[in-house]
Image (cartoon, rainbow, N blue to C red):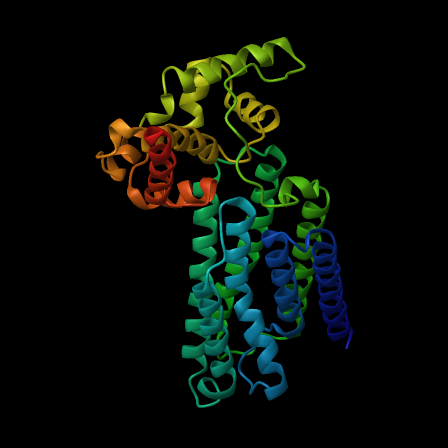
Length: 359
């Protein structure tokens, strides 16, 4: 009885914390995609806290099946949440919802049909392999986007949020696969509920202690304009470094180099990486290093597309000359900044020039 009550207390604490987190995100940042996905992840994690069990030997009550399905779907929401939280250019697509629906539907089918028909191990194994796959995807994408993140406090928060959630989810997935079809007992269930409560409390604490503006920008603003003149700076040394950085961009066009990194740029300026990240973020207003580079590349491309003498130059050539590696990313980045495709931009500029020439 004591273990049962303790397990219920842990579950209730996890649900309460997650509901508070979801309400806080919706209240303060309802217009920000990352915050909405964070709230959705918190709510689906609450379903996990209320329904999750290592013991899957017995028939699952029909009323619990929707909660378990939502719990499984939380891993897809976690993947989308990490994408939106650490990638300022991420946009939700229709197929993201389809992926979530498929995973949730399979989990529901496993509860009400596959497992009860005698295929418990198959159902549990497939569901948890899906969970492990999305965890690996989220962690991989988070690691890949780490070097380009310029927001220092977001960089530190991402480590804890992703690692803690992925570690708990990964261990649970492996455990459930290992013990599928075996009774694990009240002690294991109580320990699992306690670990979940501690993980949730730590994650909520990590998110609450970081300034919300660092994690969730108040609005999806366009990339700040490139500043070639001397920017305002409180410190003379920072001002000198910003001037040197802008010379590298404007005169040497270092952004054209293939696979240019913030480390290479910091090396050219002879300063540590963390200081260059701080300069670009706090002085120039960028949250992502790739957006900073692409803004310069797009400015060069805009000039080339508007140049009548380059009217016959293919768009892909202009994109490659500016430093883009392929046409797809160039088109997406260009439209995100200008609102039109490169071809449309060129046509609009030509239409604007022709009347002037006719005069």
